[in-house]
Image (cartoon, rainbow over all chains, first blue to last red; front, side, top):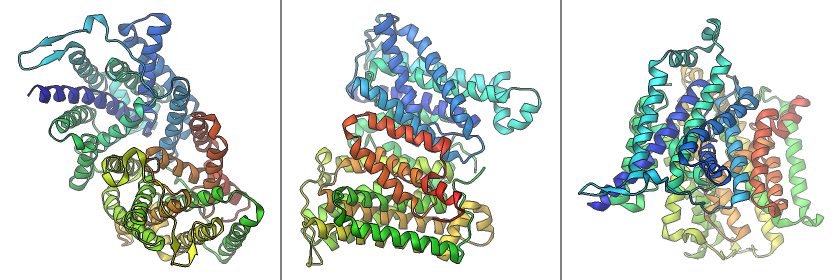
Length: 287
Length: 322
């Protein structure tokens, strides 16, 4: 039973990353009509940001949680302003190809300087150790990741679904021309949205640094899983992305316990099943 | 939203004539390669990737479907042919047929799933499916995991052509490439190809005209997958191994890049693009992981400034179809 709970926890943690990443993808897709293939590379940059902050400036984990999303978010906004902006009006697929190219460049540069092996990043002192819950041993850092991700996910949901800024954002997703006519600077909102989505990816990167180490290719496989998550959940709903992300993480964790051989593939198999039963995704509407 | 290709010239006699001349030039060049002293191994590798890119282009350029997982067909054709030739000891022609049959089967299964969504989702689904297959091949015993299948015997094609002789092998690969190329060329210029183009331009209207677009898309997907598998089978006899690197996401990206550089929706673009990318890989191999950076930069440059690709820009300049 111990092992089952441990795998459940691992599943919840991976689910947190899936939720944060697919949430960012959905927000970006809503505004820019682009599937951000560079999301995995930016997630990796978040983790490297934390690593550099610690080793070059001595700023620890808590500062990294704040600074890394801002730095990577600014990097993303520069990308949006210099490149992605020029793709508006073209087929969606060009956005996918462009961001794929960006991902290759970013990952290639980091790989060139840091190789493929992992760099260690220590768990901060405040979150070391664990609690004995009686039925299992709970490492505090892992519990923190799950709780903090939930808080961030629901804050993002609240920001988009319940605030005035979010209302502008949703309106601009539906009809950008009309929203511009009301005097709202839609291009700036698009840039900020990309920054927000990318910042969420960087935050996931910082959270994962102490668990998974910091590797140049850490985002390469996770982004494909997140694509499958997005296909399963549909990108129409913010809450849908969050719930699907966590649910698939847990299912993956359970698979690791019951049938480890399939743990790499279970998300993709589920995607196939969902496509056969409900092609629009669980929360999606017909295109 | 503008479509990804602007192939607006109708198939007039002039267009067909231009393409025939280009085809004759290409065939002539390929036939005299062994006389020029050019490294035949490089040309053979280029031809396998050129066929692969042409098969991919059939989907994106004519059907408007971006498959981001075409490496799965390359890998499947390669693995199955390699296994059949090495372990079962079948002759090369049978090995190739078995490899193609396996790719066709994979095309039926993955196509039936992937065509349920359009556009961007189609790309993500094919990517996820190819990743699924990657993990299956990683764990399946017959692929030998990380080692791959090594030392594949080349054998005698039809019991006559000794494939271990470089010149014989070269002409067999050229013949295979030309066969695949002509099948695609025929498909594009058939009524089937016209319906496919109409689906690319406006699927709703094609449906309203009474075409069962799903069937056309599935058929195009299977044809493309089978020919991509054929390219994988041929490649086995050139490189004499089959490994996981052929099924990886990076390979799927390369296929997209080759076609994009040459020109999406052009007949000869994928061939040019494939040779350019294979050449960059060959000559830049010493730069290590900078090759990835360079390939990424080509991607970015193509999408931002050069969306028609090399052949597409030339064709556009001269108002010709190539």
